[in-house]
Length: 596
Image (cartoon, rainbow, N blue to C red; front, side, top):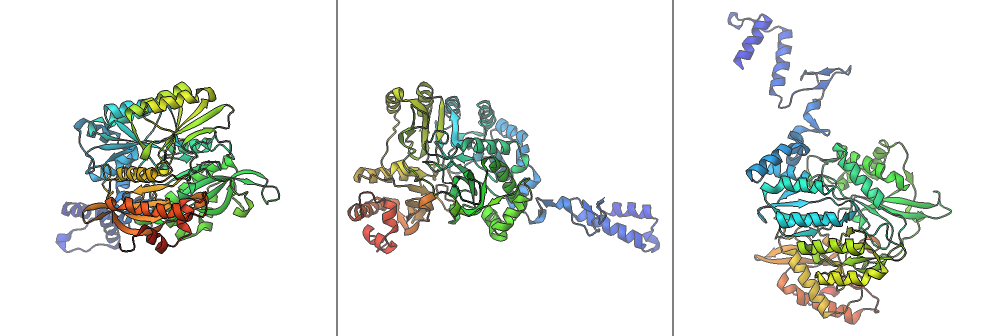
């Protein structure tokens, strides 16, 4: 620094040895120089005349010290990592890690998630790959290719997730580049499937096939998925973001648990809007924080939906909180602003207005078939049916992956569909091939029937593959569902949601039965809640038991279901209705848990 002072002194004609003092001009210059030196970020601002300046004393804001409008020094850790190195630009690092077969450091562990790669130690000393499956539709050839990946480099199975996409686990670092190249060769992508990005875009699982739907939602979900992949500015949001398109048909996609949900509705004659089919928007679903998406008073012509989604996501990207991860979801921006301001900011980015119309102007939705994702059902296309295949908690071994791919090609159109209930659907099967297709599924160890509980059971990864989870959710979920199905002849579906930690990836608050993993004296257990639902059954579950060891839970649930079987008002009463018409105190009494 002394040499820099001497250099400046020489340039200004100042001789400190002679006792000379700084001139005013020299003082201003040196103040600006040292302000620039002490800046961690180089200074770039604008004068009142709009000219670009490097003068840190100009009073202008340092535009180089802001990231998406937030001062760099205020960014939280993950945002700082994104600022320091764009996660989309780390291909050389991926090559390096593969070459050296090494695990990533914490900052790169986060950045790798932008490519769908999750290093899941200490649960598993390996990578998990999460794919994108837009609209949850894929081909038999893609399923076969993923099976080969899982066999050659992974765990020997894939997992269907609650966002109707796929995970493959236990890839070693040395394999990550060949894994990503193989995914691309299959015409698929994992880009943006993790971290602060827009997750898999979901659509009603039988959209385009459903005789009862209002419109085919798949083109809109697919278009948004492709738009995201081609829009670099839609990566690296303040937090993760979920979008769903509901066709208004017989099977839901639980749009009310998403940040943005587009739900097809019908406007009848006599309304302030022309009659026809529209999308209605719901906002800010975040069930892990006990909030459903709520109607925002807007309807859209279907062709406007993708543009509106793009505008809304950009409003969030530019204004969401990048300083506090706990307040970074869309919900918190809308809480801070209010819905009206959020819609106003959205309209500023659109070339067309948003149409406000009350929800009461929409024709009520037809009933949702909660069991429609399992079994054999006729399609809208004459002579064709789909088979909903039961895949308990989404675990599909390689042999069964190959089998469903072959069955889809032999008996259907070569198409497969995934569901948010962790099952899959084989569509477009002619009536005269249905029996053969069913026999082929049974021969592969797969079934198209399931008990009322097992068919509605979902579970997160659990502690076998996630460091956050307190319990082995998938094993416990299947065990409890089978226990109840074996003892009770239930005719109405019962949704069992089992999640391992408060992140609630399995959305335990919306299950008829919701289990949240906890540790009790070193043993695995659960907080038990009852009475949750979505869509027309929307409601958050109420806590029945704060904590109980899993080994003690089956007999308690058995006593509760015995009371349901004996006290139901009719053969058509659902377990959900039964649990909601009784107080928690009554339900605890039925289950004999008052002493817990």
